[in-house]
Structures are given as C-alpha cells and as structure tokens.
Amino acid sequence: MVLCALRQQVLRCSSHCRTWARLPQRQRSGCVYSSIHGFNQDEIKEKLQAFHGGSIDLLKQDSGIAVLTINNPSRMNAFSGSMMVDLEERVSQLENWPEGKGLIVQGAAETFCSGSDLNAVRAISNQQDGMKMCMFMQNSLTRLLRLPLISVALVEGRALGGGAELTTACDFRLMAAGSVIQFVHKHMGLVPGWGGAARLVHLVGSQNALKLLGGAVKVDPELGVNIGLVDGVLEGHQNAEGAAPLLQQAENWLSRYTKGPAPVIQAVKKVVLSGRELPLSEALRTEKDIFGTVWGAPANLEALASKSKHK
Ligand SMILES: CC[C@H](C(=O)O)C(=O)SCCNC(=O)CCNC(=O)[C@H](O)C(C)(C)COP(=O)(O)OP(=O)(O)OC[C@H]1O[C@@H](n2cnc3c(N)ncnc32)[C@H](O)[C@@H]1OP(=O)(O)O
Image 1 (cartoon, rainbow, N blue to C red):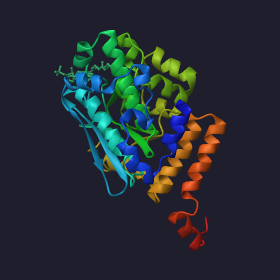
Image 2 (tube, rainbow, N blue to C red; image 1 turned 180 degrees about the vertical axis):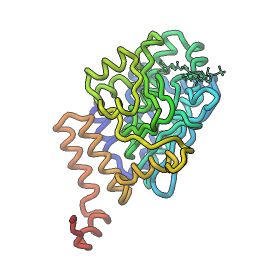
Image 3 (spheres, rainbow, N blue to C red; image 1 turned 30 degrees about the horizontal axis):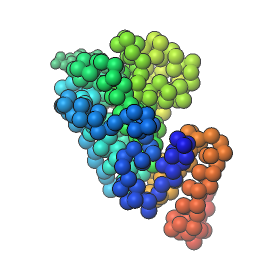
Image 4 (cartoon, protein in one colour; image 1 turned 120 degrees about the vertical axis):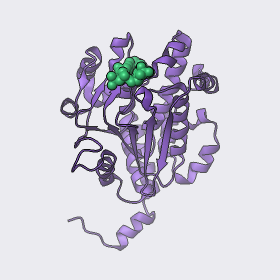
C-alpha cells in the first residue's frame, strides 16, 4: 500500500495538481505517517505552534528555482515549533508549483541550522510529544525530498543535529569553505529522528554512517566530498572579495541540471526518485508511466522538429 501510494505520488503531474491539492494532506501520500499509524497532524501542529520564533521563508523565482530560507538567526537558525509548522506549509506550496524545477535550501545570516530549538525540545521532552514531533518532521522532510524539484542544501556555517538531518532531505549538498555538518545527536543522548539516519545510510553507506553518527564527527567540505555526502564546495564567504555570493554560486551550480522545460525536469526527478525508492519492477512501471507524460509532449515535439544534434 505504501509503495502504491508512493508510485501515485511520483506519478502525479501538473494536470493532476489541482485535484491533488483538494485532497486532505494525509491522502497526498508523500507522507510516511497518517491516522492509521495513530498520527494526528492537527494535534501536533497546534502543540508546535505554541513554541514560536523565526520563520521558514519561501521565494519562488521566475527561473523555476525556489529558495527556502531557515530564518531564526538569534538562535543560529534553530527550528522553533512554529518553524516546523511553517516548513510543512512551504512544502505544500512547493508540491503545487507546476513551473518549479529546482530548490535551494539555505540558512539566514551565514549559518545553516543548529537543529531543534532546545527551548522547545525541553518543553516537549516527554516521550509521547517527542514521537509526535518526530513523525511530523519525518513527514515534512520525506515530502521535501520527494518534491518533483531538484533540490540542493547550501551549507554555510554549521548544520547541527536536525540541521544535519535537513541537509539529507535534499538531492544534493553544497558546502561553503569553513562550514561543518555534524550529527551531534549522540552528544544529546539521542539518535536522528527526522529520517536523517536512514537517508544518511543511502547517501554514504552504512560504514560511513556509523562513523558519522557514532563519532558525532565534524564533517568539513573535504571529508564530505570524500565520503560522497557533499557534491560541491563553494568558494569563500558570502562577502569574500572576488567570490560570487554563495546563493548565486549555488544557483549557477544547480542551473546546469534545471535548464529546460519544467515538465521535463520534473520528469527527470520523478524517474530518479522512483528508482531510488521503489523495488525494480515497480520502478520500471513507474518510469514507463512518467515516460508517457513527456513522449509526444511539446518539448519532445519541438526537439524532433528542430532536428537537434548532440555534438
Ligand atoms: C539532537 C537532535 C535534535 C533533533 O534532531 O531534533 C536536535 O537538533 S537538538 C539541537 C542540536 N543542536 C545543538 O545542540 C546546538 C547547541 N548550540 C551550540 O552548539 C552553539 O550555540 C552553536 C555551535 C550552534 C553556535 O555557537 P556560537 O558560539 O557561535 O554561538 P552561541 O552559542 O552564542 O549561539 C548564539 C545563540 O543561539 C542559541 N542557540 C544556538 N543553537 C540553538 C538551539 N539549537 N536551540 C536554541 N538556541 C540555540 C544560543 O543559545 C545563543 O543564544 P543566547 O541567548 O545568546 O545564549
């Protein structure tokens, strides 16, 4: 049932968006948890809203690349409860963006994200609330990774705890010189709960994941690239002389993968997503269906008419 739901999620295309948007959230199928798992989204949302501060800002650009900013600089961009709710809402907006092709996730004020806001964590440190928050964030980050957009985390400064987990919910990671990704969970007497461990194993393999989590290792850009966690290193600081601003560098990096019409780029992401998440037979069937959405579509017909050569 879960695989079937994921297949539906991968398949949905722009023409289905309006119908899709009318469905209740839990039926949109990008989620891991719904009421059948005893998860009540409205209840946890109400609880989280009480811990306010900061925001998650979304800028959708005409280029088809959106920028999502984790914005709580006075707490090193830690996630307050209301920011967790904000994130879920921004992901919904991105799920319903037919023109979208790419997404950059960054932190405000020259640092990425220091994880959960420890003030909120202390207030909901009982087991039940912790599990609800964990399910809520797993749902949001799973939906973020499953967006039909090619996404990249732009890491400047520190990505700690939940911030490190957030980087794994993007397709790619770029690190600025001097930045650090650190799964500090062990030092907090915890393990990742936002899906970061499962995604990390997929990204770097179980041996490396065990080292990073077991040692709460500080991953600098060089180590990140060596173990396959990081896809590129950006020059200097936002304001360093001679270097383009980091966001611009990240947009340039991403644009080589997002050039072209949105339906084609979205289809590229969807075939890779199905290959990444579904068993082979299911992935092949899904690929066939996604192929059907681009075959004979305007971009394909234009390319055929122009007799393009690939020299
Ligand atoms: C572990 C699992 C869990 C999850 O996955 O859900 C988490 O993510 S728990 C959070 C894990 N993160 C931390 O424990 C970060 C703790 N903070 C630090 O290590 C440092 O503050 C650091 C390295 C982020 C920045 O150090 P620096 O010396 O540059 O600055 P300050 O320490 O003075 O920080 C400025 C200001 O920010 C507040 N701050 C930073 N992180 C958090 C946070 N996660 N929650 C709440 N507040 C945070 C810090 O307390 C300072 O505030 P101030 O009022 O000035 O004391």
